[in-house]
Image (cartoon, rainbow, N blue to C red; front, side, top):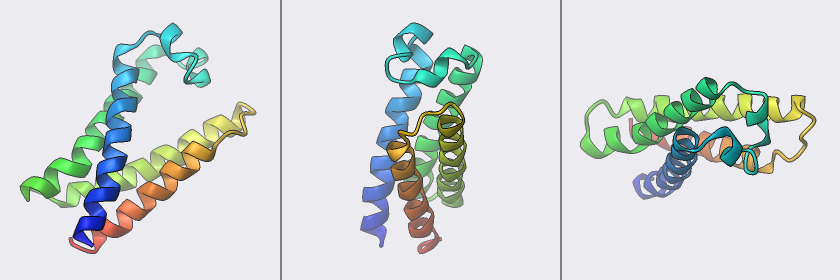
Length: 120
């Protein structure tokens, strides 16, 4: 299970590290082609989501790797489940039915939660 955790959590962390980093450094105009929801969301909120994603990605990897407070990995994975539930809701409220990526990330985060509980 340890290897499975590192594979799933590593992939999830890479995705959120990239996605969060993009939200932190790009302008609203640069984000619009990738994320239509940013047109109605204040940029400070978009930046805050980016910070949450980057910190969550670090939380999936760093605590178990160092052995310091490994329960933070579980908290980060649960946070990503909540984040994707909220993201799916935002997409559906906007009339955007293309939520396959959100559901995939939700499922991946849920698997990460399960895997992280096996070694805590």
